[in-house]
Length: 78
Image (cartoon, rainbow, N blue to C red; front, side, top):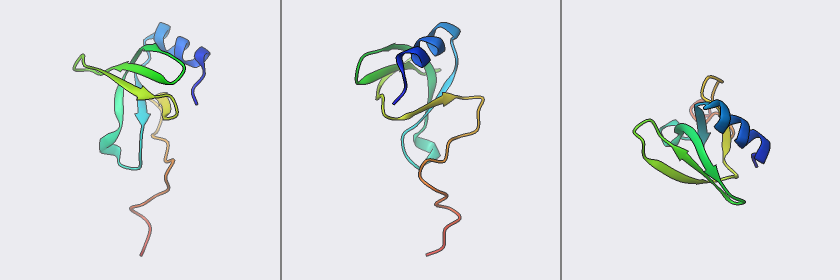
């Protein structure tokens, strides 16, 4: 879970984040931190909509490579 210090640093610096919610890249959220509480984080997306996300997701700067938390599903053979 992301810490209060990390969230505050991202908010103050205005860092664009990538929130990885599952293995599908299409479900990633991109935006900046605007607020948080004990369980959730509010992210403002580029289209100015605000989404409320669980703090247990992976929050990383958008400039860093995407964290592959769920394994490489495309490279696996059945």
